[in-house]
Length: 93
Image (tube, rainbow, N blue to C red; front, side):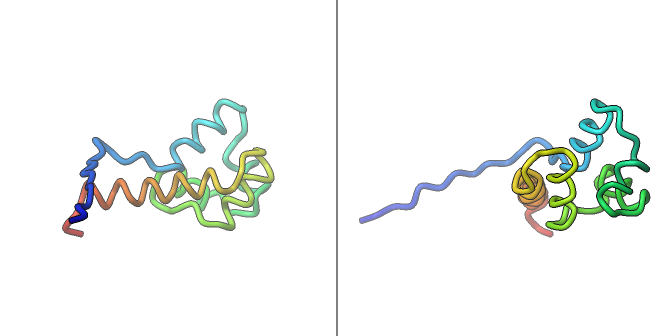
C-alpha cells in the first residue's frame, strides 16, 4: 500500500512582496513617484503595491525586471508565496 506523505506547514505571517519592493526602493534611494513613472504606473498604484493592498501582476513584474534588473519570475514567485501563506493562515476563506 502506498501512503501519502503530507506536510502541514503553517507560516507565522505572510509578507507581501510589495513590502520588499519598498525596502529595495529605499535602499536604492529611488522615490515612489520616479519609479512609478519608470515602470508606467500611477504613483498611487505603486503605493498600493508597497502597502500590500494590490498584487504584483505579470505586467508590474516585467517593469520591475526592466528597472531593477531582478527577474520577473522572482517577483511573481514572491506574490504566489504570499498568496499561499495567506491561504494557510486563513484556511476557511
